[in-house]
Amino acid sequence: MKKNILICGDSFAADWCVKYPGAQGWPNRLAQEYTVNNLAQAGCSEYKIFKQLTSVNLDQYDWVIVSHTSPYRIPITKHPIHFHDPLHKNSDLIYADIKEHSKDFPDLIAIVNYFEKYFDTEYANFMHNLICQQINQLLINSGIPYINLVHINWDNLYMFSNLLNFEKLFNTQQGSVANHYNQVGNQTVFLEIKKHIETQ
Image 1 (cartoon, rainbow, N blue to C red):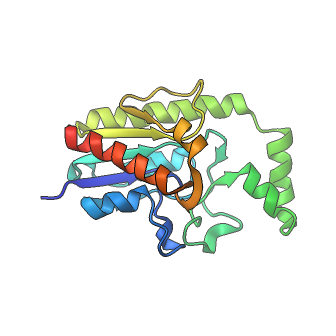
Image 2: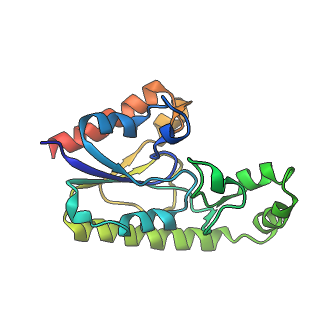
Image 3: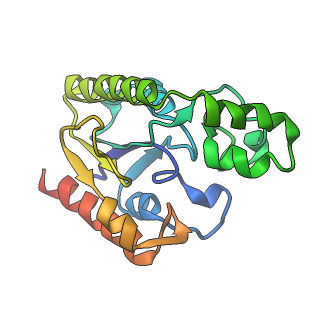
């Protein structure tokens, strides 16, 4: 009987096939071998990852995989640009993204100014770590096996239990196949997660 797996996170874990048919990343590889419910959303904040986890009954899963994100994303209810995009419709505000599109959407200039002049990174890190702590405690309390993933620099951020850090892999195997990895990167992430699932 196939294990039932929940995936939460941002674009490092989302199903890119909703926008790019054939974009088979590591979550799709997992879905070929297990029963997967993938709630990950491209561009979302750590707060929305927490909301993904609390939106379902964790008791119905055999494993939970959570891919964590940057502290510097501002949660919003509706994205001013990407609300129609199947992959990014639930995205939160990301500085580089807003900056890029402000050339075509003048209403975004105020958000760019906020990021550049007023955004408090110390506060953002503090809140991000509090949310991560809540996520970790939720996973521990569930009694269900889980894996936390990070793919970016995680210095001075919350140290999860059961953490797989793919920062070095991402730095060497970036690509556009899916989930920001090339084929080698996606295969490596898939095999590492599968090893943990099968040896538990």
